[in-house]
Image (cartoon, rainbow, N blue to C red; front, top):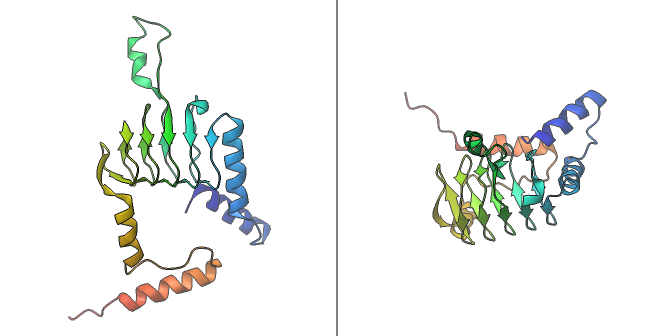
Length: 189
């Protein structure tokens, strides 16, 4: 569950209502990032705070999803080790994220990273450099292991891909519980 969803759920519980819209909280978060100078395209879902001291060095395309815990680093803190030689040194880099990308939970993009359109970055990946469009990137260090479009085709056919997005929570939970209960097999012992 994203931080914004957790906040919405907590507020709903405190107020005794379920009328708090996580989409509205997300829209406010995106608006705050834009006010700080980050370029954020249309219809983006950002569930990570994305704290950075140089938000104006980040550009995010349209229809991008960024999961919780994602870090976009625009500076290299190791430059601090050179302060005896150059007291004010900082090493900085832009981060560019193309259209229709998804960045998984706890991924890190380092200074100078560019993701082409329609990339998927797996959870926990550490990504640097220029990643071509339609790439699937996983690991530390992040490596392109295939095409994002092929991964998405497999997800369409996956036995655990369910149409639950946007359902009321109780209905969503019931559908998921029924699905996984049907898949369980009795122990043969």
